[in-house]
Length: 478
View 1 (cartoon, rainbow, N blue to C red):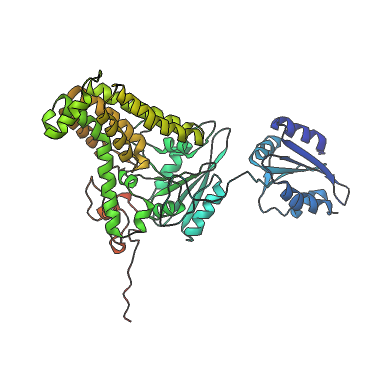
View 2 (view 1 turned 60 degrees about the horizontal axis):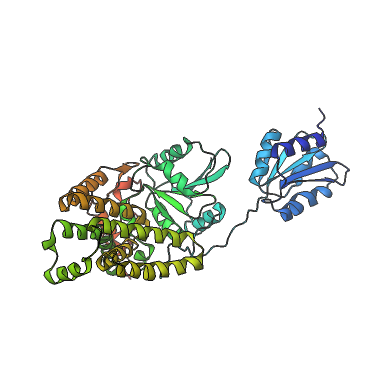
């Protein structure tokens, strides 16, 4: 059967139907006609010329044997023109020959990417400065650089009907719990979606309760943090096109830990962890407690402070709960605008909003000075734990609404409901409040507390790992 080179080129180009799909025809030394089809925006033209076209132009053998000369390490056989068009979209170069039925695809993709640099959202004074990028191969290279174990397992998935996004599941075969990787893989593959632009989409798939107020997976832009969690027995998820990697199972205590905790003295790290917990609790409850004190329990405020507050709120037309709610909403609007606007304009907006707008509102008698101070301090407290800001902001608003309606009793009941909800939740069999509920004294050494290096002998027991020992001290008699 004779295959028409011109007809096959036209069919593949029609299936691709993009102006950036280029075709190049040339003759070999034996006079056979070849064609190379590729996407100009993602394929490496230098590699195509050096690894494919140059060897074939010097080839004087049969056209059927031409594929053996291609120096590209990743070659694929395409069953038909439809599959070839799909591989072109992924960055492959398609090689056709006149009269030859075989279609060969060479992986020569070279997508634009940024260099490895320090992640902007997880800056550390001590520790490695490298951060993940948007390229999955670069990210896996950063992981391989730190985990040179032959037990490191990487499974590739293709997610997205149209985007064909590569997703890598990273784990240690001799550490991760039995069936954990398969559970994560099934939770991802059972969903069909057009495109996966970021790992946040995958985060929704692996969560048992995607609509929960509390997130169900940990995220990181630092390879050292990612590798440490994989070594604990977790499964890491790398998504092509996203610099944020995910790990599951997740426990709430992870949000209050930072990479720098493991590079400083354990006493200092423990103090900082308790400081973060205290700051988040204050940030969530302070506005609502202020409203409760004004409306229901004014005796909670010291006498001298009460006189100051009374003089400040005199003449304010809004009730304490409405005033605090209004101030919180103004703060959220300013925060959202400063993040979304261009960098230099956003900086100016922050100054104008914080100084001019706030000072003017106080002088005009719309809001009181204590309300501005409390809302500002509450926001600062919440940002001591950046990964928990989304949840804590909503909890702060919810507590404020309950406080304005039911007072202190309502806050206590709401807190009890939240704790009970968290205590009963788990993902992949790991309790969300582990190791606090159920209580595990050994695992507590790396939760709210940060023990010394020799206190971290075993991996977290809640993860159900195969190999529980992560540190073994060998005695030497010198």
